[in-house]
Length: 90
Image 1 (cartoon, rainbow, N blue to C red):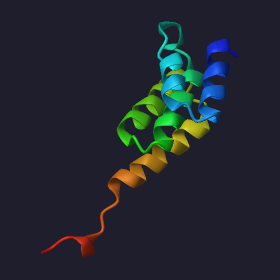
Image 2: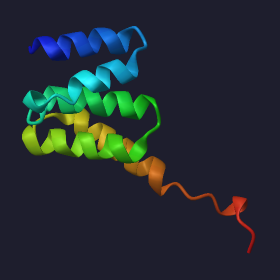
Image 3: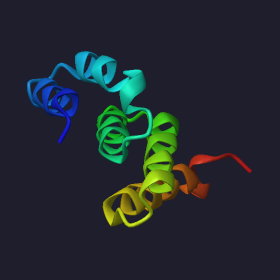
Image 4: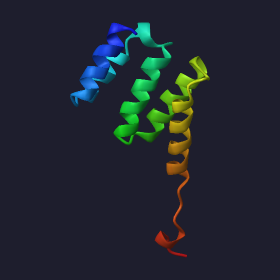
């Protein structure tokens, strides 16, 4: 695994999400499925649904066999599609 990804994981595990995202934004990682997945996880945990969804879809474009990325896509779409009719006036 790439050293940048390992360092980004360490930063994420220590709560430095912005530092991890900065490392994952390196041009050399643009087509790396693991980097896209990790970036998606960070955005998902911060409830940045749109960015997370885009990163997980990018991960799936690079590596369609990553079932965890597809699971995250499904979860995010369920969150975004949620509609509670009792919370709206007729």
